[in-house]
Structures are given as structure tokens and as C-alpha cells.
Length: 157
Image (cartoon, helix red, strand yellow):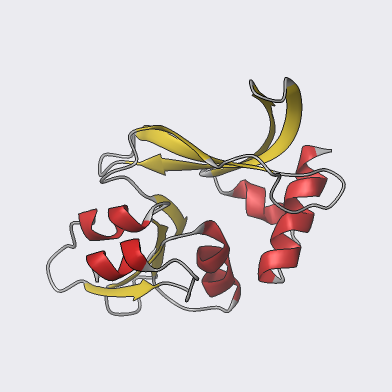
């Protein structure tokens, strides 16, 4: 059930509906228990990895199984997010080294779905956008959506 809810959430927010999304080792549809409500909820979990590929943390988006939108429960980050990213697409070696970094998973998946070439990373939090260490000659594109509360992203930019 959680995969159906997560897919529907992504379809609603990115226009993407594909079970192949979960072939990415950084994305999981799962159930999480919320201490405050004392209930289990479907969730989309985004794992972040450091430069050596070790999982250091995750962002958990709790979903409402009836509406397939985010549940009225605060998003949770666990572990260390700073300096770690969720890789959504790998660099295609035929092209110049371009890395696109987004703040949220919806934007990262939309860019991938659009067929944009390049490495696509999700920073999970606006403050983490500045923590990526580019390689030599690597070009960085920050792709952030115009949220109502842009104060954190503006500080980084």
C-alpha cells in the first residue's frame, strides 16, 4: 500500500507515476510510526549519502493514505544531512560535467523526468545546498522552486 500512496503523491506533485522510481536505492516507500499520533503512516523516505557513498541520514515525508498528499505531520530528518545528498541521476559521461542540485525530491524527480542530462542531487534542506564540493571543471546548477518561504534558500544563494 505504501508504494501506491508514494507513487500517487509523486504523480500529484511531479506528474510522474512509475514504480521504477523505487529502483533508485536512495528512495523508499515504507511505513513509519508517529509517536504523537500513535499511528503508522505511509511515507516516502529519501536517503542521503556522503562523498564515499555511505548513508548518513534521511528525510521522511509522512503521507496521508486517503489524500495521497503530505500528512499533517512535520517532515523528519534523521542522521546527518549536512554535506550529504540523494543522487537521483548519474552524470552521463558524453556531456560536460554538470551537476544539478535541488532542495526537494519533487524538483529533482521532475528534472530527471524532463530528460535533463547531468548528475541530479537532492540536498533535502536549503541550508545543505552550499555544502556540495564540486570536482574540477564541474558546473553547478541550483534548481530551487519559488516557495513562499525562501529565506533559507536566499541566504545560501
